[in-house]
Image 1 (cartoon, rainbow, N blue to C red):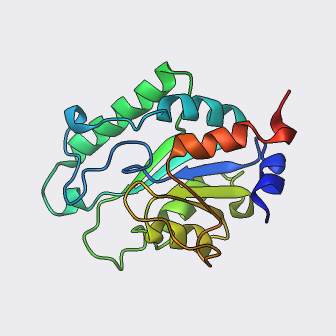
Image 2: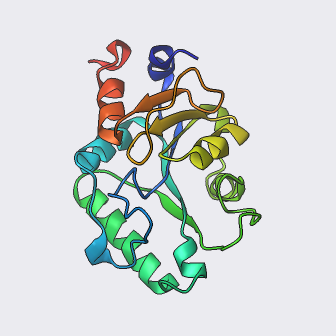
Amino acid sequence: MDPLALKSEIDNRWTLFLDRDGVINVESVGSYITDWNEFNFHDGVLNSLRSLAQMFGQVVVVSNQRGVGRGIMTIESLREIHANMREAVQANGGRIDKVYSCTAVTDDDRNRKPNTGMGLQAQEDFPAIDFKRSIMIGNSISDMEFGKRLSMHTVFLTTKHEPVELPNDLIDEQYPSLEAWTKTLVSAPQLVG
């Protein structure tokens, strides 16, 4: 579907799925965010999440966090990071309805993206989720594959990788940041006024 036509359809029946590292916060490439003190929001993300919370019925985060499974950080530290992240987003007028994390080490775990377990968990928790009315935003091909396996519209952010040549079977749209994508969404003619 044409991105502008899609943007005219978005309302509170739609769900926004977001990867965490590299989308919401600055990614520590080759390492893990193990403590809240290491967590830095990307420029414009808090304002973007405020705008997006007004458009989407559900906003959820789906994040592979293998560092827990590898013993590099504790599940308690991960929960603290996510609680603080949600609190900061809420304090700025946005919202994240739930955070799903896969701490498994092996790629064959049903919850590790690109496998669809976290998306199916979200649909169990929020029965109104319709994957055909969902958008997945991430900065890795596994995020895009996760989205496509569930029939979502996909948005690739080039915060970690070079832009991909479009058209691409896994990627519907491509932007440098969540802020850049949100600006095009907010400025879509059908959403003004």
